[in-house]
Image 1 (spheres, rainbow, N blue to C red):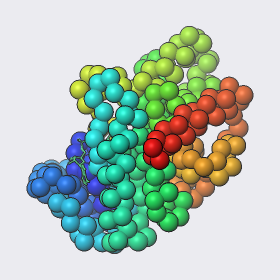
Image 2: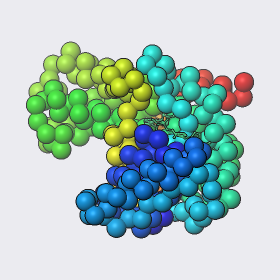
Image 3: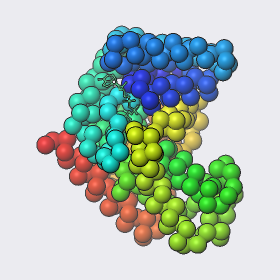
Length: 308
Ligand code: NAI
């Protein structure tokens, strides 16, 4: 499998590193607009090959999309990240132009590529790719829910004082501080509902900490996070590479699912060789449904900014 990662910054480089370490792709091409930057990151990463024991070939190019030709998957991380106090929505002006140009360049060289959108505001950037291209909807995947769910599981494991691998939980909805819907009533520890172990107050604290997970890190780091975002992307790419049919919450174009239409938003998706192979409609309780509907309204408001 050949993977292109556009944007060799914090998230793009982390994503390339995890893909290489997991050793499922033959080739990763890093692309950046900054002269020499992707080449430097690729060289640094390749010098880890003998240390970390991977065979993936990583190369870097400055804006030369001919080198991305024949990519099976392209990850778009190019754009600006938020600074402390900023919302993801404030990035729309600059990032929309970048995402549109990058997608056009990718398609010229890899017409059948599956695109994973990471740049923020991610749901709106994924929707922009739907609007600006004729890529079938199964081949446009927004990454947000996989990261938010990992952050949810981190908070659950912390509260339960157990390993993260013992807990399961999912975050659906928009990838924003107000739009995320952590499905706390469905979260489990070794198949047992977490409500067996945690008070209602503790559960709502976990939900709130999850929703501001990105902002908390931005406050600490001065810029947005990269390890977990990179790892989350690498898991989506792996599901496609290995045709695993694993379920991840991804931003997908909804056409009636969950009663929603005309936007890209986080919903559980089966990922395989064809990208999003199915949107899974899990049973939501009334509160969860109401939160998802409200989240969709928020995403639509941000989408409307694309036309302004
Ligand atoms: P960064 O600033 O470290 O890297 C961005 C890179 O994109 C830079 O190296 C820049 O030179 C490059 N770039 C800018 N315009 C370009 C163009 N036209 N073509 C190619 N490369 C270009 O930023 P970071 O931290 O890697 O974040 C990237 C994006 O990902 C941001 O929009 C951030 O908000 C978003 N993000 C999304 C997450 C998600 O869960 N969806 C999680 C974390 C970050």
